[in-house]
Length: 346
Image 1 (cartoon, rainbow, N blue to C red):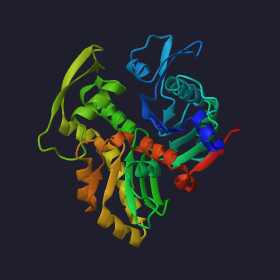
Image 2 (cartoon, helix red, strand yellow):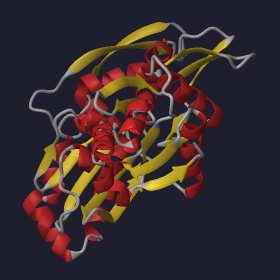
Image 3 (cartoon, rainbow, N blue to C red):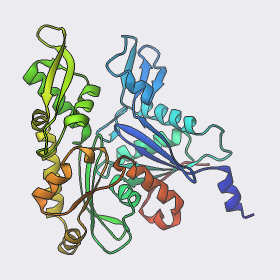
Image 4 (cartoon, rainbow, N blue to C red):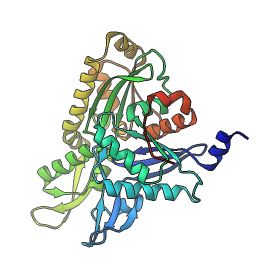
């Protein structure tokens, strides 16, 4: 038995999609083993973690004074270094029941528009959480690999990845990002727009989870074949009492107009900056949409109408990025040149 084969038996490589809204983890030869909200609940005085992931998300807007909920990532980057590190450590411990004799190698996806300082913060969080080596991969590249796009070919592929904190629009060719537009407007900003709209129009104060539910159930980016309605519960800002209002999909589309328009503007800018030969490839191949934001009703139709290009929403868009890290791990030699490496001593 070769040393390399023996070494691989002692450890498992891990792929992580460290998202603003959700964290997904992939283990080599196993697949996706964790998909949890990127939320931590802590005691206010001691800073001790009370809950993490789905359990912590259930506490959003419902905690007593001595407990607070934290989303340690904002707009795709680390806002709270310590909480991110503790969250990562807890997630990794959750999926690894027995400790490996050798620390794992970790591939983490990051937004393509973040700074070197922000990249280093991600790497250090993973190192402190127990990684032997850390490799970073840009989210649109990981998403493209995850959906099976042959990124190594000399052909232009455009991918739009709309997550919780960032929207990434990238043109990929020859294993590189030729043209990229990254904006910090995505799912979270859509929720905030819904909260602001209902507050202004109905004097109704709702929480983040309610806004997410409204967006999911009746939100859209383009006129629906049949408009929808739903009851929305919150607190009346004038009387201070619980209140229910009936809200329609036309209203929520109006509420979402600003963030949707910002994403559309970024798409137009990305297309304008695309070299002619690659633009011709995109005409032939169309645009691929991934990420949770791509599930907003009729978003693909809106892009198709405004660009004149074919648009495809992939199957299971929420897992594309982490599946990409999994493919990179499985064929590490093939993809090594597109990774950015941060190494911690064994």
